[in-house]
Length: 305
Image 1: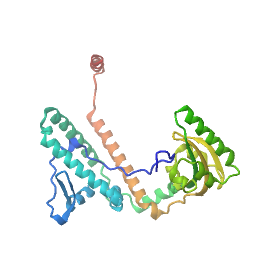
Image 2: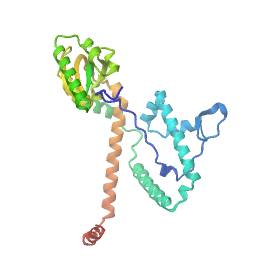
Image 3: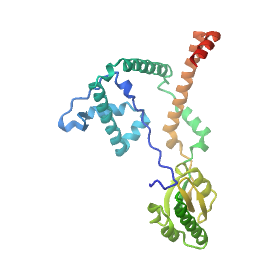
């Protein structure tokens, strides 16, 4: 979708990318690969099928399923791994990890990683949690939040607002013509004639069905109260002026227990892990009985300014 569109891009999956500094702590060893076993290669780096399987297994379960189900995302992950390994090889070849400052930073990274892993181990959720009754209870308590997003099929006429005063005057005149003709005119024909968003103009302004969480807030506010067939505009966004018509609305149905089951289980496990972690840290603080010399601390703070 062009940058002129007021609609937000689909949220991309986020992956836990290991920091280069942490990776420098351990050498990268690729699995031995035969020619037919090579999945990807580049920059002197080769990934065998065993490497890619290990890369997948390192992802959280939800992300692993999502990646393996989407070929383009899977390929991006593999390409990223090739780039990471090539960068590490370059850093090692330059002796970067042996520099004193790098060694000090790596020591801090190792300590921080060890700390996070230790706290995570103390927050480990038992394998049997949540139980099926737990999941069912969570479903019944949160049915309103488990509705699929409402989808809006929106038609638009887009007019850019340039900075140049002369061109801006032309754009505003154009918007005035659309506003005057829209009540009695054919919206699709007007979109084909006036809209500067080429992708939708060719379809009579039709943007297709979009979930409400993928629509810019100012656009959603403009179309949410419309009845099917009604129009509104001009609406000002960061991209320019827009005229909208609500072509259709699909109210999201509430997910069934089966549909929401895995997401609920993951949410309950995450909440329990957080509760266990907080309880562990609270007990640790009580056990340590930390005391601070406020007078000396204030002196150090003053000296640091």
